[in-house]
Image: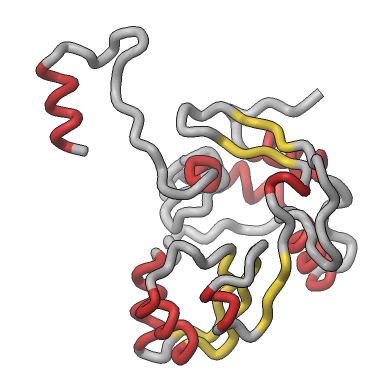
Length: 203
């Protein structure tokens, strides 16, 4: 990445139309996950966790305080599992983990939940598997590497027991906090628009 940045500087391509550097992510919707605050040190909208006004705005919206201390990165959680310090883990997909890390999770985590649309290696070592729908079977959106939202529209029905990615945690939330949760993908999109300033509410 540093070599590419140096090359762009040497050729005068920084700030020019149609030029610049666009790192490609290994996994789909990686940027979208960061936009939602799914990094230990980030709030939704990629604000740093140390941003007091941002935490205050979200706390007022959700009716509960936002922790000021970041959580653990995946690599740190793997090490915690190896030491037997990780009580539970909810893993969305498992194709990003090498075999040695999966072994650490299978032996070092007391309760491992995997949500995935394929029964891959991570699902084989999980205590509970939550079957998810594929991108072709659900409504929602993904964010491309340029930051643009791409809407998902189902073209086929998911197989029995498989649910959209948003529905599974929404149902879990409704069980843990009766009266909470979401009834459709559009309600999730509306909350995203409220939580992330640079997204607009869908029409």
